[in-house]
Every structure is written in C-alpha cells, then in structure tokens.
Length: 403
Image (cartoon, rainbow, N blue to C red; front, side, top):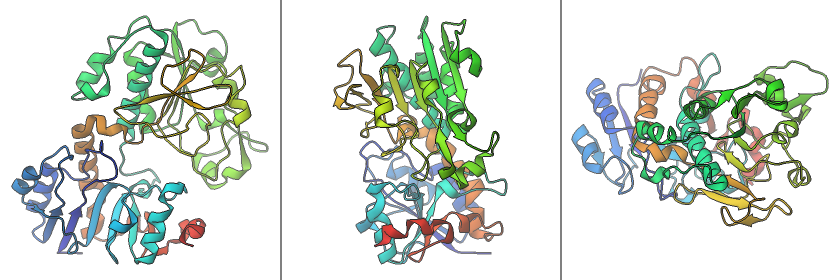
C-alpha cells in the first residue's frame, strides 16, 4: 500500500475549447482529506471550467512545475516536447488507434523513458471500461446532429451548444423540435449510444427493428440502433462476440451500406481502429443511392472507416459539407445534395462542468484506489501503453511508431 503520492493535473493547451478537468476541486478536497499522504499539484489555466482559486481553496498547490509528481493526469494527449522525462502520465493518448497525428507523442514518450497509461484501456474484471466521457459525447453529438438536420432541411432551429449551460437546458431546447421527419441510423453500443438515444427519444423518434428500418416504417421519425452484427459480416461465423471482432477484425467486412442507403441521418458511435475494414469505400460513398443528409461522427476516427469524415470540426464551427460527387470539403449547408458533417473530438466540453464532475467521480472511486491499494486486478498494467518508454505487450503493434 502506498502512503504518499503526489498527483499532477496538467493544463490542457492543445485545444482552446477544452475546458474539462480530470479531477474537480470538490473531488480534490475529498481526496486530500481522506489521504493524508496525498498532494495534488495543478497547473494554472485560464480556460479550465474550474478556476485556479477553487483548487487552492480545496488544498491543492497551483504551479506550472509538475516535476515532483508521481503521476500526472490530463484529458487530451499533450505535445511530445511537454513530456517530463521518466514520469508517469494518465490521459486519453489516442495512440493505440494509430492516429498519425499522435506518432510524435509516442516517439517522444519512448525517447524520454515516459510511462503512459490510457483511460480507454482501464477496464475491470468484466472487461468493461471503468471511466470515460462516452455518455456526454453521445448527448452533445446527437444534439448537434439534430440541429444540423433542422438547419439543412429548414424543419426547425435550436440553439448552438455554445449557448447551453447544462444538460437540463440541452433537453429543454431539443424538446422544441416537433414534427421532425426522417430515418436515423445509429451504430455502436454502450454509453455513447445511451446519450444519443436519450436525445432521439426527447424529440419523439421511435426505435424500430431492422426489418422496419429497411422497409417502410409507420412513424414519421424513426431510428435504428445497429449492432456490430448488423454492420460487420464474417464469412464463416453467423454469430460472434464483440471481443472476437476486436481480436480478429481482419476477418470481417463491412455490411453497412444497406442501412446507410435508407438513412437521412447517420450518427456513428461505434468502436473502430486501423485494423478494422473501412465501412464505406470512396467509390461507395459517392454512389447516388447513398442519400444521407447529415453525418455525425461521434467516434471521430480520422482517418477512419467513413470517407465523409475529412477534417476535425469544433464546437464553435461544428459543421462542414462534403460534396457527393468528389468528396471535397465545402462550406456548411452550401448545397442541398451535399452531406453535412460533424466531426468534433471534444464534444463533452460543451457541458464541461457536468462532464468533469462525472468523470472525476469515476477517477476517485474506480481508478485511484489501484494507486494506493495496489494494482491487484492488474487494471493499471493493462492500461499501460508504454512503461519507461517501452511498449507493453498488447501494444507491440505500434513499434513502427517508435522509429
């Protein structure tokens, strides 16, 4: 058991709209009162939703210097040059999905003998993730997609998320949507789709089964929650587990086109990484029978399985269009035949206070005990991408990123 520990909280610098925090002042205060050998050092920030003074009042030290920390917590990946040699970091590194823009981070961590743990791989004995912002991403992502659909079709108009204070106001605003018509395809399972479904049900969308979605549903506004068994196909296996899919993605091919052809809106909340097949090829995406009007990539895998995701968008400028004929980027809502796209990779920041409170509570109760009580379930070990600069066994496939 560890009796003394110093936790650092980094200042999020890469994204101007990133206002969340991994530990809130209230959680910091509770932790410091409960663990006498604990110190928390917070880098000052003018954009964080909780001001520096609130951390000082909680008993934290606020300073730029994190060199005394045993473990440093953040949210988003940081610049390679910001890494402190031989330190331990815990954040969403996004390196495991082989995102090219994070290659420098992995190489920098390797060269500086840094240890990186990734929130995404903190899993319990049931193999379910312990922490995440998925619900909030689904909530805000679905809201933005419905807003885009209203702007594109002229059916309705709701406020930008920039004007939303909290979850209650989001639902108060989205419930103004009435008489909306269309078919909505949702891919994925878990907390992301839980958030998406809450928004869709709030606007009166009715969930239908596969046959109804592909046929002629009776309701004016419907959605279908497609599982991997719907949009992935295996030549030899009629039934397969999610774990088998993630372990052997090269054995599968996409079966999503028949669903996209029927959809007006597509909200993607599925898991995908570079080992998986593309959901649509460039040629398929340009076909005339792919008629979606709005695509919301909540998973935000760029480059990813869907050719409509061309670039990141932001909370301030959430939408852009993609021209069907050549998949070129166009201004948002610039053509009726274009696909309007949302690819925001920090959606929960629109509800930064509530999302941070939820996440910090998860960290306090589900993760930090493994630091002071010992990693008895190997939760931290499984989430370690690099240890002292060396790739952990499950992540050896990233070895070319270290060259």
